[in-house]
Length: 173
Image (cartoon, rainbow, N blue to C red; front, side, top):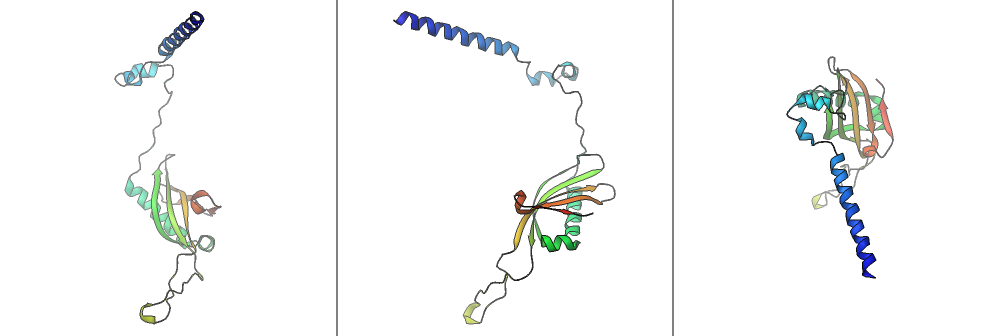
């Protein structure tokens, strides 16, 4: 009874070894072999035909673009009525130049709607109640905008409510 089992395990081991050898020889050479000679990389059959050459955007250029978008969102009546007033920019998610001549920025911002949202926090020493806002009506949205890098004009701007899980607001330019 042990003879057929050992023959089966020997066949399985031989098959596994054969698959490992075939896999090893079927793989292309390591990528670091092409780092030293670019001509060898260009001749490789799986090499990309073109290289992406995206324009580099500095942090200062991105900050100027973000400031322009923030100013436009604060001035726009439709954005103020639908989203609320842009209170703060929370964090910058990314920036770059996807096409020549354009600057794309993406950041999170807090919008606060006006109106009643006051709390009745008692003042110390029983002096009455304060009229402070209690944080209701604040929404964090993800702002995605693209600008013309030469003129600084906003080409498109959209705000995704509740960090992408709500409706989107597209600002009319």
